[in-house]
Length: 421
Ligand SMILES: [Zn+2]
Image (cartoon, rainbow, N blue to C red):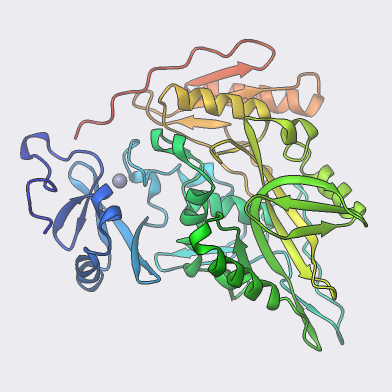
C-alpha cells in the first residue's frame, strides 16, 4: 500500500501538488483523507517515528504537518507558525503572522503548540452565584494596545482561521455548513479556553442529518444539561452557528440558527448593544442578502424554564461559502476573486483594530497582491486611514488592486498556473 504507481509522484515532474509523506511513504493528500481508516497504521508509524507527517509542496524542503487523532480518525493540520512557508497553491498555505489579528494580544493570550492551543478568553465561562462578585469581561474597544484576553469575535476569527475557512481556493466553492462544522470540530480537542476544554464549552451546530438526528439531539441535550446551575456556580456555554433570523419573541427577541432546533433568547438592551457592535454583520441588508450569511458566536445560559438565554455574542458576515468578509461589498469582491479562479486569504482582525488589506491574492504572480475595497467616502477617520494605507502600499512597492465601490469592479489578474515543482 502506498507504493503503487497510483500514489507515487511521477519522477520526471519532481513533486506534483497535493502530496504528503507519511512514515516514508509518499501519498496524495486526497487519498490520505479518503482512506484514513486503511492508512491508520501509517499514521501511527509516522507519529511514533517522526512525530509528524510532511507536506511536499515545496521543492527541496519538507514542511512538517501535525498528525491529530479524533474519535480514532487521523487528521493532518499545518504546523503552527509555518503556514506561510507552504506553496501558494497548497491547502496548508496561510498568511504571514503579521497579517493576522492574532498578533494583537499580549504574550500568553493565545499559545499554540503542535499538540495544543490555549486561549485566554475575556468572557467568563462560569458565574459565581454566592460570595464574591461575578467576574466581568475585560473592557473591549480598539484603544487597548495589546489585548490581554481574546474576545468573542477574536475566538470566532481564530476558529475560522485554523479551519482554513478564510482561504479562498477552487475547492472552497463547494464549502457548505457541514464542511465548516467538520473542519472546526477537528481542531476542538486540542483547544482549551481559560483552562477548560473547548470541546465541552462550545457547541458547534452540526448539520442536520436524518441518520444522526438522535445522536445530535442527545449531544445538544447534554450541552444544555451542563448549563443547569449548581448551588454556587452557573456555567456559560458557547454556541457557534449560522443565523437564520433574529425576530421578536414574547419578551425581547429570539434568534433562530440554521440546523438548530432551539431558539436563543435575548433582551432588547443586549440586541441594541450587539447591533451597535456589529453594524455590518447585523444590518437589515446583510440579513436580506442572498449572497451573504451571518455567523454568530453566542454566550448562553439556561433559564430556570430550560430556555437558552444569550448573555453576549459576536457576529461575522461571510460569503455564501462561509468566507469571512467585513461588508457586502467585500462579499462581492470575494465572489469575483473566486469566480476568477484566484487563491486568496481574508486577513482576520480578531478583536483588534489593526489595518490589514481586505484580501491577499497568492497566485497572481511571484508576490502577493493586495486587494482593497474602498467603501463610504467622506468620513474623516475612514478617508485618513485609506490615504495612509495607499501611501504605505506605494512606498512599500506592494501591488494593489483597488475597488472604489461606486465604480465598476476592476479587472482582476489571471491566476498563475499552479506552481511547477
Ligand atoms: Zn504544503
